Amino acid sequence: MFIIVFESTTPASKAAVGGQYYTQMQALLRSQPGFISETPFASPIHPDQAVLIAKWETEAGVHVWRTQHEHLRIQYKARRSVFAGYRLRVGPELASLLGGTGR
Image (cartoon, rainbow, N blue to C red; front, side, top):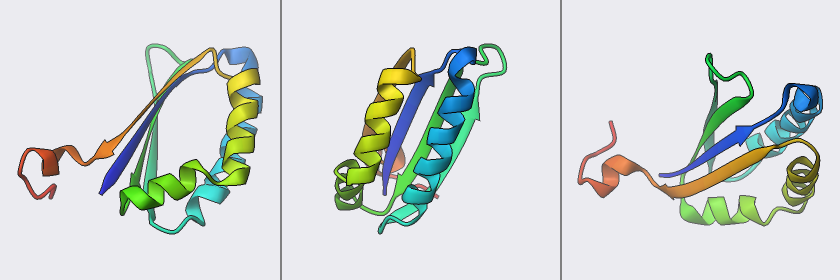
């Protein structure tokens, strides 16, 4: 399993537009081969900060998602007009790296 962790900072003034992009991205994401699930988290202390964890069956599925045309279009718009900051991390499930089963 591969995990994508997306951390973002979205100013309150851009939250509505960010929500629209997120809705568009969700529809695309759920239709991607190899996609398992996503879980968004919002910070109760810093409401402009959020983390989203997406799970994928394989690294190849992540690569297809990363190069999907509509995903790239929405990503470009959001980076330019919504996020004050973001960070993306991609990798295999931590438990598998430590020799566990991840269950």
